[in-house]
Length: 222
Ligand SMILES: Nc1nc2c([nH]c(=O)n2[C@H]2C[C@H](O)[C@@H](COP(=O)(O)OP(=O)(O)O)O2)c(=O)[nH]1
Image (cartoon, rainbow, N blue to C red):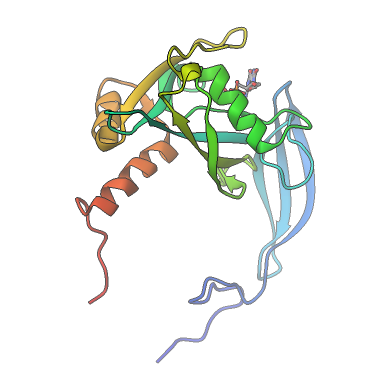
């Protein structure tokens, strides 16, 4: 027999019988790039709660994301399809990370223009946008930071992609890694074993590809 739901309990289709509501935001500290705030809200039972939240001071208004992440697909004649990754020192970890190319959206820039600009700056490649996600959460437990993920196809046989040259910003030291799609998960595991921190979205992308290959079968109900 189905049990009675408590107020605010999440139902089977994922909706709540009542919803949480925003009360107010109190800024605690602000630097040049990041802000720390307390967000006060009422939970579905009406009880007031508080959550510590970080946000970027560069956040643009509206539904635009903070950042654009590029999923590059490099196609060349007589080569397996590859993706392009970036290795860089991340002070938050004091370690090198492996990530998809990405960058913050400039004011008045479209996500497509940002994706092409960041891909060019970080890797030297020029490509065509094939797919775009909505703005999605990057770390919802601690930040309101969002990103759109754009799949960009790179024709590696074009003259402009023969000798790709980065256009790095001052203070940016990025190593470009070309990894065959087929070997992505095993390469990421290698990087991890070697002490690098692999970005979780990149990891999940590689893992999902393994799932679709049937090497790791998601369990389905019989
Ligand atoms: N959190 C933080 N962001 C910074 C700092 N300095 C700084 O420039 N930024 C912002 C502005 C930089 O543009 C950005 C660098 O982050 P990346 O993910 O590598 O994106 P990119 O490809 O460079 O746009 O972070 C800082 O000290 N802290």
